[in-house]
Amino acid sequence: MNHLIPPLSPTNRWWSEETTAVVTGANKGIGFAVVKRLLELGLTVVLTARNAENGSQAAESLRRIGFGNVHFCCLDISDPSSIAAFASWFGRNLGILDILVNNAAVSFNAVGENLIKEPETIIKTNFYGAKLLTEALLPLFRRSVSVSRILNMSSRLGTLNKLRSPSIRRILESEDLTNEQIDATLTQFLQDVKSGTWEKQGWPENWPDYAISKLALNAYSRVLARRYDGKKLSVNCLCPGFTRTSMTGGQGTHTADEAAAIVAKLVLLPPEKLATGKFYICVESKKLISKL
Image (cartoon, rainbow, N blue to C red):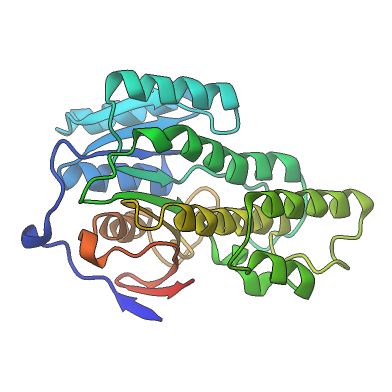
């Protein structure tokens, strides 16, 4: 299904300066651009980064141009103790969360390269990091009539049609999918990598370890959306498209600012227009394809 994202309208403005967003991996690239766009729209935003110096410099650069509602806290999503410390810091300092953008991710492949280099690190960061952070912050969401929002930055590389194994695909597309089945799928992938059989077993061919991490994130998002259906919390995924960032070596069809504009429009949709359990793919600056 195709969607044209409507422009943000003052008449549909449900948020205020009291509305608080957290954006991970936000010292540069899409994450930084999302923080800046949400600040421009009047929200309070927590910029996180695993490198304290880079993150504090990024936040300070925004303060210098007039954005007083930006906060910085160091967060390494691959480290459970860092996640716990961040959740505690957020609870003490801000208390209530409205929007979480899980943007932080890693890949060790260049564009056009399909080697498997550090699959455990990629899965631990891109999937388990985002999941653990989400679970740690769930008690802090406002969940009012405005509906709280989680947007997981994903990739079309992680869509189910990239799986060449019918049996694995059947498990992951089930309406009764569980977190335990997602974990078992990741364990199987890592075992197949170690045994050198991953290509024969039908796993994704392009950026395979990154693709699997995003496949798991998409699956978890569906499970979480089902868990909170009707409970004032929306959970969606977005592939921002081929964006010019450090992960793509500066290659891409559009800029981080253009991707951030799409992110902002999605997370600020009026409650009555906000879906849940969707996977969106940005195909143009104002056009999205949505899939279940």
